Image (cartoon, rainbow, N blue to C red; front, side, top):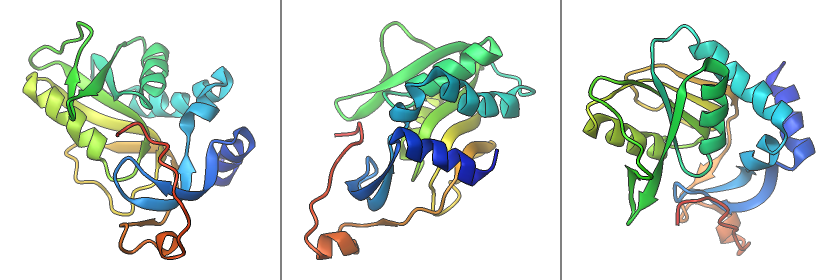
Length: 189
């Protein structure tokens, strides 16, 4: 399936949105990927997460970890397809951590899964949790890669969709300059 055919699924489900958005990263953009709208359909979840699972199927790892809330469905489906354990991190008091009895063991090998990667800030927060546990990150899989610069990671990064989406600081944002109000749909408050 081509990148454009995948984007058409996002358009059809309303998951690819246009407007003025304040992203979780703090950057502004004229497009937003609300992956939950595409993942509400199990066949699409299996389609996109299946590509991630296929890419990482030969990797040696024990657990899939995802940042809440957007990455949870992605991580769960990738783990299901690969027969692995799935856990997630949550942000409390502004910091990502493991809760709900989840833990990682020393030297446990972990695949990080996300819905959308823009700056890799959430990924790096999850990496910190992994490293504090003494576990080892082996890769990053996401449905959408909208990075403008390849994130500095010591492991492979695979995404099912790559899109060059413009992002702006508030000061540079042309939509702010036109006084167009923004929507803040992300999970990081």
